[in-house]
Image (cartoon, rainbow, N blue to C red; front, side, top):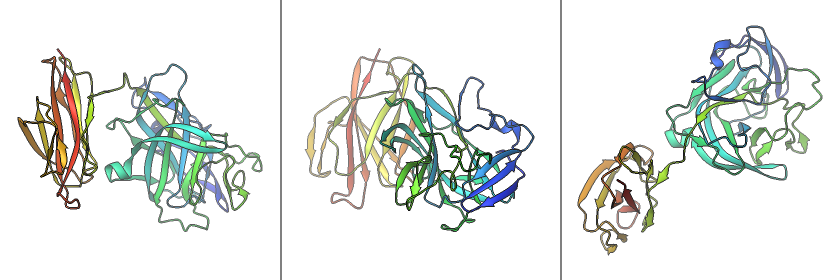
Length: 366
């Protein structure tokens, strides 16, 4: 994170700050990564003071987001790092808050209202943790361990959003001098400098809006209550070809538990990952496999069971989010040959006491 020392001119819901960010903190993990930003600050800010603006009206539950557009011909991208500007209008360092990081693949427009695409990452819901943001500077989040892919949507856009989860320095309805900041430098303060359809804000009671034209109670936010572009940035690397998922044959339920086997085509030397999701947390999951496919109704499960007769059973626990993730656990080769997998997880809330997953056919290649 880059820290800043600030002299501030505070206004209701907007605070202009002069800040010298630390230069070396703004590099991507690899020199071959693609760097994305819409703000006018340098990628590596110099040591001298830079003007930024704290948007002091964003409350807990509301979010700041930036829209990025992949050029024609660029392959899908893996997110390797994201960053967000967080500041204090009075120039004080060390104010901590919590934020959720959300990433969406795709964006379309219904008039002036943004319609975000598939949510491909949600830190608090998927990983039960938050981003700690601290004043005053650009906070960075290493995404290299997460396989977050964007660029598969027809719009060729992706959205990086930071949602305020817990800001103890803010009372909603009054100026919150600890908040996310934009690149507005205070020049021509009565002109809106927010680039249309790039900086988004999720407003309580309204939903996502284009910050350049958003209103609250009929009053435009820009330029008095919002100005400039969010300092939200991203680094990405070429993701390569999309993963191949083994065929889903159905036979799902009762319950919501689901399995997927996705990765490389399962020829010799290739691998795929096994993922079980939507189960109850911290319960036993019985994973059944067989080269035989004989769907039959089971009165014990209240469901159709497909890998019959079962030749292999593996029992694993789900995690605190109801998931099992086994990266690169399915090796390829030895084919052509197919086998069938279905999972049963314990659930105290269903009549039969279990949830039954879909049935997957795994096709091994030579």
